[in-house]
Length: 515
Image 1: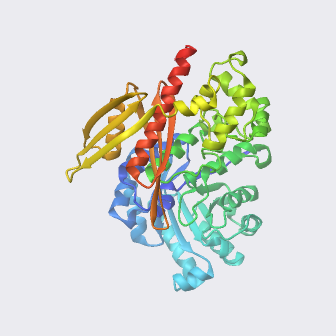
Image 2: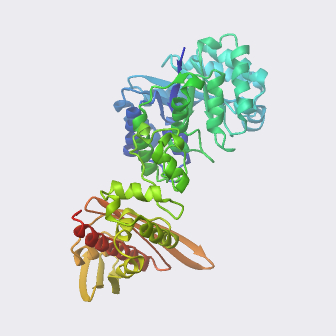
Image 3: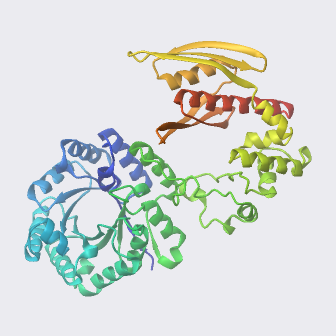
């Protein structure tokens, strides 16, 4: 019979404590609401005794969250437990999570105690916590390096005292999946009262094994998995919950377990956490990375077109993501080109596939990624003419001034074909936005800025800036990339690249009545 795995999210506690800038109460509440919508069983919302700000955030979240169970962390100290309970006093349901080091390394070098004293502290703390709640989780910190005998002994004692969940953390990401699986199996075999408590696991990713260890623990009988969205957290991070959740769904016949997660909320939750925590999700990140469901190889693209299962073990729609379009690069084949042209509304009789493919390969070698509007233009004009049209808009002059009050003044002279256009704009929104605003007023394109990204590198005492700009025009996204040692010039050139692409696209789509 399939059993349910409890999903315990610690993004707002273990994840947040590793951020360079702490989240405020409003941001934490947004993440908590997103986690609740996702269907997370337990949300660990903070460590209330650590700061007044953390206490206030826990209190605020406890007033709002109703569907998920709220949890707060506490040391085996009465004051910690009192404050955790106070912060969550208005919660519909709450859990107190207490922890204590159990490995010899932690006991002797960090806590300066012996094992008997550790057991006494753990037991007395659990008994004290019972005055506030019957939902108590005890963590054996550094369980991965705790001797099996000591680990089983303290687990038996804390369950006797009233712990309803015992957490087995691989605190420093040290164990291998086979080792971690054996730890869980031994606990189930050797702890006589283990049936009275849920075994939880909390793995760190120092060796890149957090998800593997968590899955091996599930197979060994663990009933709760702890982790964070996008795997954020101390050092190399925590178990990435989205990976565990999709592994459970994708390999359900093997694992024979399930979760209560609403899978279609995974992608939006990942985006929310990434944005508010200001931590970019790597493009190759499993499940939620921008390349997780994209395909560049011509062989892969052809296989996907015939049957997506050839190269996809999961449906992107499962996580709330629309089917991702192919990356059109020099590795793409004719099948992908034909498919993309068809999706844009063109039949094979509208263009010559061989001519298009040859020009596409040449452009891809120059540009890297080829976008829809590039492909569309190449289908109907030669590459040489395309490259010439890319210079329709040219920057003749750009002047920028800004004062201590924050007012930016931008003056631009732009050549469009054979005409010279001049515009001066003022704004308090910063010089880069003022440049965008000036360009928009110079031309007759109703564009809206969607993304503006700066990557600055210092090499051999020289600063090089790459600017990537994305704008929306007529329900289509246009991308402009420029590299320059001057941020202002790079920003302006990225916008000019976009304007030229929009202008070319307009000519093509007017010709074929696609606009």
